[in-house]
Amino acid sequence: MITCYEQALSIDADHLDAIWGIAESYAALEERDEAANWYQRYLDLEPGEPEELHMLAAMGVAEAPERSSDGYVTTLFDRFAPDFDDQLTEELDYQAPTLLAETAKDHFPEADSNLKILDLGCGTGLSGVAVKDIAKRIDADDLSGEMIKLARKRRVYKTLTKSDIITYLAKTKRRYDLALGADVFIYFGDLEALFGGVFDALKPGGLVIFSLEAQPDDQQSVGYELTASGRDSHGRAYVRDIANDVGLEERSISTEQIRTEYGEPVLVISGFGVSRFNVPVLAAR
Image 1: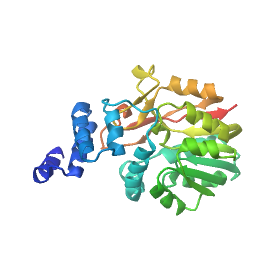
Image 2: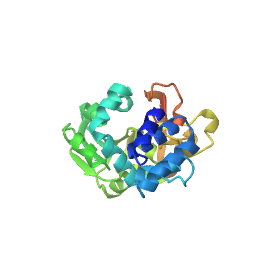
Image 3: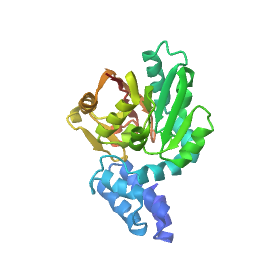
């Protein structure tokens, strides 16, 4: 693949798609220094481009943010929106919405369509569809306007708001039985503000169920780390400690295979291959 991109550059030395492709290829191979050189080359041609700035941090040559910037998330998912569902369900065998919905139903066996649910970072609405049979009302937010357009077509949400999660949680006055975060909390390193906002949005005894990329056992002492994929991984002890600090307590946790990437059985810490996630269930005290 890199050879093909190099051929494109031999014709046009400033071919942005080729430069991006080479950078992504080296990142996938965990050759961070080489990937960083190509991300920087792209950034020299497109100063301030949010994806390149973020990926330079992921390569370790810039300071990692406490959470992914709004510009990075919006640019990334606006670009992916048209092919998002097909890529996830057909190519990557994406299981997060199903796993989170099954977990929710285990914890609310008598729900019978009575739950008020908040779908954080809803994307195209896959999680909303997965829990609609136990919901009286589902509200949602997402930063990507293109994602929201697709989610609206599913007709499962009472409200859809274009907003980052922290701002949305700070403004909402409604209290929920259940909050969901499918494949979205991985764009936060520091979880304190996020968990605090979720706690405030839950009813007493309400649950938040979410996926996080798990760190290997030998890195559990690390609270969180921005990986070469551009996503954050988290240690279980860190997640539990931050949850306890804001008033949430762990009810259950499991490790699941949630998708595949590039067809290679590589642990998620690399950001590619078989992705294994913690699926925590936290309750508001």
